[in-house]
Image 1: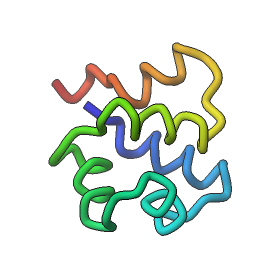
Image 2 (image 1 turned 120 degrees about the vertical axis):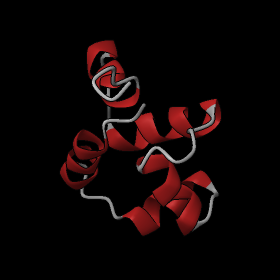
Image 3 (image 1 turned 90 degrees about the vertical axis):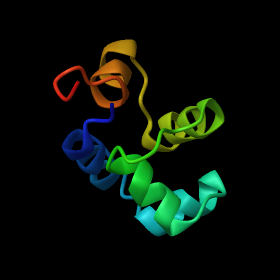
Image 4 (image 1 turned 135 degrees about the vertical axis):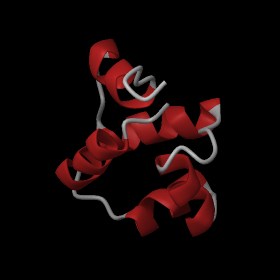
Length: 72
């Protein structure tokens, strides 16, 4: 599950807007919100693009945001 709060922080740190992200990912606004709020899952290709957009460079940071075990 996605750590929604940490993902929101990373988006702000990267000076991105959600509008820019959904356009880059090629998905709708609603799809992005559902993925961020754990109502649906990021596809592998979307996740790879998002990691690149956010500048995530290490596995620990990646797994902390996108494979959050606290919410399972």
